[in-house]
Image (cartoon, rainbow over all chains, first blue to last red; front, side):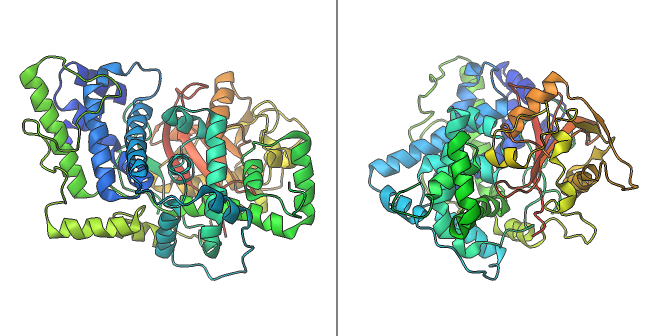
Length: 223
Length: 300
């Protein structure tokens, strides 16, 4: 795998090579970003099988549509956009078939409005935190979830999330704000559990140039 | 605010925290928050929700999924080299009706479960965890966060409360909270050049330390203080894009993994979670060029 990872090429150069017929170039591009793309699909869909299908669908689509990329955004933004759209399409299809787990919006708004003020609690184990966060994420609309995944979980600048989602910065902020409000009553019991418990540095946002060190997807740095 | 309730709607508080409410309405809500413990706690809880989301590690792609995608991409590449023609679907058209649909040599995983029992179990676990697939990695990351270091300055401590350092033309605060805490002194815009070569493995610690150092500017600290200089228009635009208008606590034109890079950090506030981005030289109003990102320890 490493012999075709093209460490000296930027994302855009890899895509160009792909368009020129290099059969390894797109695979190298995927290798470079696959962990982040997987995280987006998994967290947006909350279902690993659906996420795997969405990611595969998105990557094949990107492979074939590479010529559509016009360079007005980063390659990684373009890839994320395709994955997010594939994921949201699946959510909508499930919703259309009545399989949505999203609760009644009015009820959820009420829950958010009536957020309890919690007593001080012992921090739950962080593993439990992750489980509870996962469960709570299922309860909010997919569009809000996608915004929160990008901004609050993966640390994308709001402007980048707006580019990925093809909505305005204000709309990203609004979706994140409303998503947080909806999540609050479901995560009250975890408050205080996140202090200082962050994973380490994550790379792989963009490879506009090379030799910024080995990008090892999935390897947190500082933790 | 609702007439029939003494409290502010959580959505409104969330929008206030996100900088979406300004002017007199924001002033009214802030005045209410100052005297309402319930709403103040809800507001703080909204920031904690962000902190909880940030604390969940990114799940690495499972090996089985990675192999499946590699195979699918390889099959596409093989098919393209055989056909050597465009025949590409238009944008928006599904690449294939279902993942793994019939196409020469294409994905071995149709719409079916993963091959091995181990993989099945792994997927079952992933389904349960949803955002924590790859549990072992997640657990390691969750249980050894940020290498608690007795010497690590707290990003939430008083040492980093020097927003005035970076106030002025660098960023015009748009968050009401920031405006409230920001300096009105309008000192020179602040970009430091610490000379630090930030490293991926120690990024969190290095940024936290630098935040503390920068916070000591003007104090009596004997530690080496970075030199402040004016931000270039490109740096201004870059920071504006990265922080979405929030005033950063640190902008350090330094190096990352041996190459020129700028570190942009937000410290912990009542309405924001501490984090830092490493951006490359192309960062501008239109391009982020983010090379790395890290959530910073809140210090409790």
